[in-house]
Amino acid sequence: MPEPLLSLQHVSKTFRGRATPFGSSEAKHAVQDVSLDIAPGETVALVGESGSGKSTLSRVALRLTDATAGRVLFDGTDVTQLRGRGLRALRRELSVVFQDPYTSLNPRQTVARILTGPLRNHGLPRDQKVLDELITSVGLEPEHLNRYPHQFSGGQRQRIGIARALATQPRMIIADEPVSALDVSIRAQILNLLGDLRDERGLALLVVSHDLAVVRGIADRVAVMQDGRLVESGPVEQIYADPKDPYTRSLLDAVPVPDPHRRSRPLPPTE
Amino acid sequence: MRSGAGRAGAVALLLVMIAGFCAPLLTALEGQNPSDFNGDLVDGNNGGNPYGSFGGVNGSHWFGVEPGTGRDLFALVVYGLRTTILIALAATVVSVIIGTAVGMSMGYLGGWFETVLGRFVDFMFGFPTLLFLIALQLIVPSDIPKPVVLAVVLAAFGWVGTARLIHTQTRQLAAREFIDAARASGTPLRRVLVGELLPNLIGTLAVVVALSFPATVAVSAGLSFLGVGIGADTPDLGVLIGSSITWTYTGADAGYLIFPSIVLLLIVLGATLLGDALRDAFDVRTEENAR
Image (cartoon, rainbow over all chains, first blue to last red; front, side, top):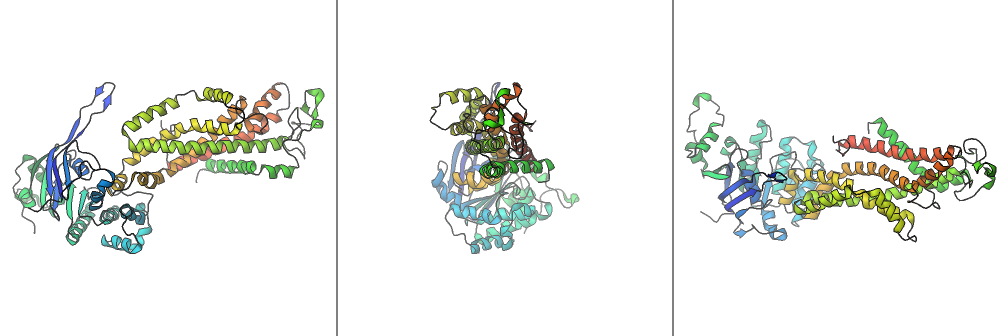
């Protein structure tokens, strides 16, 4: 196995209980001792129901929140303790696409301004040509650059979010529930776009989702989380064909099957 | 703006503001100025009451004259208006800047910083401001101009409400994903605050300015009324109203009380109506309409 690009080692994250005059509420162990490696160019799906800690884990990986224990390595460098300028490489090479395209774009900024932000942070060229290329790479038009987020549909907004993630030419993107806020009819488009961009640019991808059906077509490997722990991980076909953990099985059972009469596993392998 | 009341408020405020800023022009038009004493216009045998009806209103003294001194009341009102507006405007601008900086840093940074500063804000909120203002006016050296002292103390206590409002708004905004997106791409703190958060607070700030301006006008007029704000030598609406009360009690014509009061009412009411309309338009939750 090649050197991992992102390596989460025994990561735990505990949210302290809120102190009130009547005692403090219980601490929440959102992530407990999770280790996960992602190789360059690899796509890993992190699945689990809401509250399983998968979003917290991705926030730890992005260094948006600090792990209580464990280490985060990016490209061989321990970034767990880095702050400010020390995080520059991580900030440039690891991007994020958020779930809700309605709150993930600043409503007061034009698309051009939104895309310029990351470029400016890293002193990268940000002329018209760069912006035109970025916006067309996600299937939108250069004339969209001067508009505001509210003038776009959900799917278009998510494309803008993806363009922003691509701006600094990262080596890896973490997509936190990238399609769950979108209409079912456009989910496939956005997933295909992510898959195509990954293939073109050799990106590593961590797709966080509560829906196994969503990640099946895109992931190489699946990691399943439950109550803050990693309960199962393996190649996507193995997880689908022969889930070891009962929790994984129950997640798979929740995936609607096109033909109810063929409800029994194993599902036929794709591709 | 669709609100009729808001539009009326804006017009009233604008008219009064223009009158204040064009005070020298308007008094020149009238042919008077605020410092000329006209002893011949007041009846010394009648306690210094102005001759003529309604405080001596006539073609050359539009609002009549001040009892006792015979100074032109229109000139006093428009010059007083100017003092009042300038003090309130300066105090409002400074207090909104302080309040915004405190509120934003609390709401965004959180943690112990938020806790400590939050306690201080609570302390300031519960402080008996008026008593402190009165005490402070008495100990400040007299060579500092009174209007400046007044503006500074009004600003020093006026920022608290703004800080609280901006604090909650910032907390809500900071939880939105575009802030995380900005952080994840390495946006420096200053740019997150100024470039990402502040533009989303503009609506709230417009409302804050429009609502705290009339409140500041009222407080500064109140202080002058109590005799601890502006000295009697500077024309000011609060001072005028304060001294007119005594005259009205002792039987002078009510015109001396009514003209400055109406102008003060126009500022406060106009700005408040405008602020309310802005608040509804921007859908801002202030402490008044939160319940």
